[in-house]
Length: 214
Image (cartoon, rainbow, N blue to C red):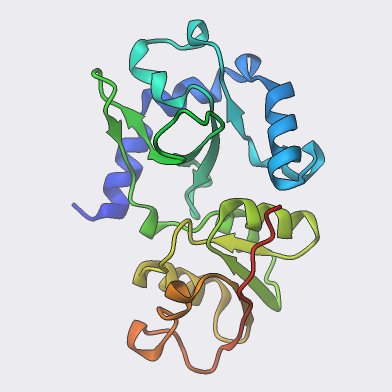
């Protein structure tokens, strides 16, 4: 089964996605706002449309298997065609967590993670693709994409240090070749934007090695 289809199938049956859709009343909005402000210099108005999710009380979870999302900000990743959530990038706000970021579609009954293949998606592509911008900003970090969007720049995120062939194909499909790509990525990602990775050579590509996070 293709990884893209598998990700969609896992999402459609995900208990975690269903829970998050119907549990906004459990979000710790004060802590979420404080963390996004202190860590990333983002106000609530900057990310209000991104449906961020944060639970800090175990009693709010439907089962112990979901404990992996406690004290983590969930950034929903949406499919570029259906606009439905396929999974979450989960950012820890707890210094005691061993892993800062988790990639999650769902949890098994024993609490182990069911991941989705992020190489088949681009964060925020579902929103940007219909705007037909003349310039597109590509970031490694989801938060950098949110900050750029808050400043009025159309932005997507690869959600990691590599652009997959599928992600490059999505850029080709939705934006064509007559667009300027502004790359806010580290060098390992820039290295993937080469003719060998089938990135059209008539793109105008600007490399900007920097980080918007504070």
